[in-house]
Amino acid sequence: MAGPLENQDELNHDVTGKDGYVVVARRYRPQSFEELIGQSHVQKALGNAIETGRVGHAYLFAGPRGVGKTTTARIFAKALNCTTGPTIQPCQTCDICRMISTGEDMDVIEIDGASNNGIDEIRTLRKNVSVMASRCRYKVYIIDEVHMLSRQAFNGLLKTLEEPPEHVKFMFCTTDPDKIPITVLSRCQRFDLLPVTHDKIQDRLQFIVVSEGRSADESALDLVARRAHGSMRDSQSLLEQLMAFCTGHITVDDVHRLLGTTPSGRILDLLEHLSRRDAAGAIGCLHELWKSGSEPEQVAQQLMGVYRDTLTVAVGAGQEIMEFTQVDEFSRVQQLAESIGKYTALAALEILQEMFRKMRNSVQVRLLIEMTVIRIATLEELDEIQNWLNLLQSPELLALAEKSPVVAVGKQNDDASAVAEKKNEVMQAGSAPAASQTTTMPATERLSVPHEATETLTSTPVEQVAQTTAAVDSTPNPESKLSEDILVITSQNIAAVWKRMCADFDDLFANILQSAVVVSLPEPDHLSVLFPHEFSFQKETCERPERRQKVVVALNALTGRQYKVSYGLSQEQVANDSPVEVVKTSRERNMEAEGNPFVQRAVEVFEAEISHIDHPQ
Image (cartoon, rainbow, N blue to C red; front, top):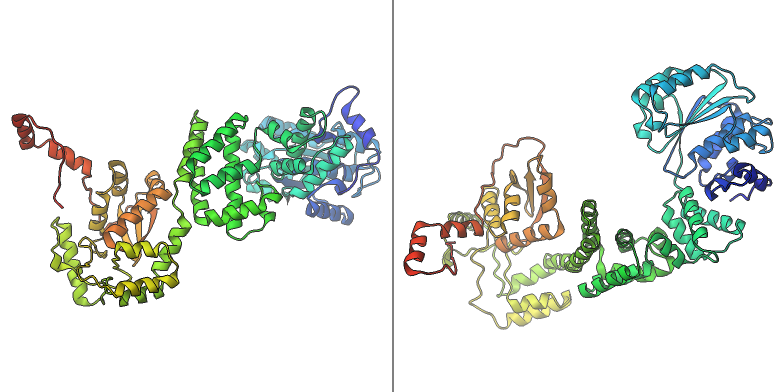
């Protein structure tokens, strides 16, 4: 990073005035290409254009806020108009350089596109374009936030922008180049300025602190640099707040008190409680944060940020990717990543994202955060579930299952398929199947394990499964039979199976599932559910982790297989070969039974109360 200008104090005096105070972001504004931080590609391109005499008539500088767009335009204007130029190193001492630095030169006109965005302002500009520069080599128009101009203003500028007089240069700055008409973009040389890296922001802040005669902890400046998210101006503004907030040495605690945030170590304590499914301990951590004065919105953002760091570590990223935790906390983040796992971290991030959507319309932010924390604490260990599912589907376990008499396994044939389809038809009609109708199916489709064997599978490694199975083999149970209610999903009965599954849920969720227009079986272990194209709310509701898990568990209970369920929206009115019929929920059937005239008459005659209702299967 380049050092300060030799005459920086004198320049600061000119910018400051006699008795006024100028903020840090303006006093330490780069005055040359060498001081421009983090934009070496722009510096090289503009420098080569000046040296080779290939300077265009219109330039567009695009990028996020606070990365140096307007500063680059000013430096470029000085390089073109300096008395020793055009040169890539303006002298900074001539009257033109000094006046451009203070924004007072009459030939370098800066226009705010947000407040001067009408056609009248552009007409005035077109009239003044033909007037020669008074003392500079070029007349430069710098239009900031140019994307705010109206459509009429852009149209009025097109002809002048394409063929301006030789003494005029246009320089546009914007944070949203996508809003600029393509007819304007095609007439400009575009340069995209990048967010400044964290290390360069921290070095610049350290330079400013030393220049101001102050001191600060490296960790405090690191936190300020991370907080800026690539904006040099934001980091300098925050640093100035800190220097006004603290009369002496700047520490990390000062930064947290100013921002209303909490140290990332306390957020990691909260995550450790969540990883242990300790909801009470997590609520206790939140209570301590509220007592310390932490802002709920800031705590929510930090919680999501630390989960983000944990997820990146869980997928194998290093400590250089972390943005919301300190470098010395990397070992704790690693332990959390191993304990939580990537699937659980993803589910927690989805829950937090939903929380942020609700926070926009909620006045009880603390309560919403506490509810979300409890919800995360009750999440299942999704990584463990996935590991056991992979284990149950492994060839080794299936081979062992075929040798065990307690596992009902058979080979699929045409007769078995016909019997299975016939059984499904009988169950769709509402009649209970007989014990003699039990059919054999492949191990991948049908597996019934005794309770003792299930406990063994969930608590022992793969090597011990063979021993457990062998032990069970020695004491066969001839009365072990497959469940009578296991169904085989086919393309012919998928609608009926979906209908029966919906009846097991509460009214609201059942109605949501029944609004699907198409339920298909694109793959043997994959159900595709399509909602009407305007039913995006129903689709998002079903895609929530806990709702998705309910459907998977219900299908597993009906079919004995693990199905993957995906949800989508139909792009058009679909001719549905398997329409989803509306099925009455348990509550609706209870209300219908209670309203039966015979039941009401019986209650009246015997002065009885309805205690329980049994429905036919």
